[in-house]
Length: 110
Image 1 (cartoon, rainbow, N blue to C red):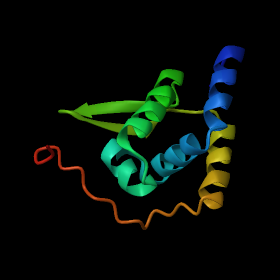
Image 2: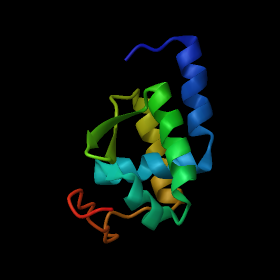
Image 3: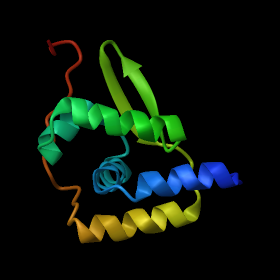
């Protein structure tokens, strides 16, 4: 993946934020997560999570899949060094895949 200098600066800014690092590390471990699942995992208000996810989306780090009102986020194809940073963050923040996540039931959510 070839990125321009401006894209690199934006990417590094996103990676320098602790909440972004946690969000990205969880997405890496779970492959796809909904905003409501981040609320449970991170214990952060939904507007804060949505703001961070929007900035990650605008830079092109994550992609979004919409299902009704719900937005599911996954990682885009990123440079290898980003995955190395996420490996470090996963270890640093003790992120494990064995956390039981509530299912995002799009039909029953209100």
